[in-house]
Length: 62
Length: 242
Image 1 (cartoon, chains in turn purple, brown):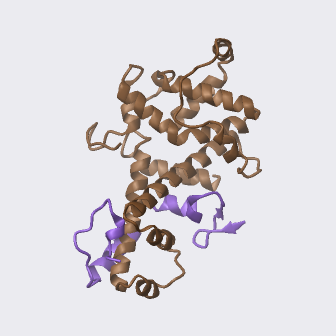
Image 2 (cartoon, chains in turn blue, yellow):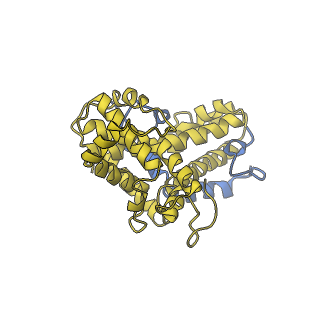
Image 3 (cartoon, one colour):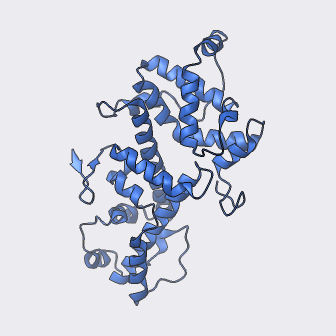
């Protein structure tokens, strides 16, 4: 059995792209992670132009 | 299915449509219910199997239950005050499973011929992958519910990348949803031929998009915005075995 390197929960091998279900649920909260990322965004000189919510793949131009 | 409207600022969702219709015949409500059942039928099948029913009987029971549900049974039992589709579905199934006389009568008539939007027989394939443990039927149900929900959200996110011809990007970036990428940002940015800053912005937006999809998916099964965080906490506790 594998364990999540972040939270230590057991990792099932049946889907979820191999990601930890507990951590994925935690990602649903409006957390400080978003705030931290926004701070990074503000400090970043490379700001993407007009991203659309429905297309996260356009977010940084790669 | 999220559309703006409904009470307060909470959008109209599939579940609020069902609740609003009650037991009245409304095509939109029935379609919404069928759509919800199509997503969340497997946790119920797993519950029935864990209750000890053999494969054939579990398939028949699950088939009959959903046929009844989608054709209008039990919807009048939904309590808008209690909220979640998850609890409604399980309580309705429990009611059905104790309703032996009525069910056997239906089976003598040839059973319900309502066509379901999913294939019950697929459930056994999934069930055979369940870990052999001593989880109660209720725990199996809740755990499967949480994973079904998350799987649906990840597929929607993945599909967005596919639609834009960027499946490879999704496959390489998905671990960064949880901040678990092993490749440093500076190296990943080089691989994507972009700046480290732009990459961070992209990952931030990926996480936000995931969070929005997850919260929207949960909102489809509750009837009040205040229940979304509570449902997240409940499902996390269910996964943790608390």
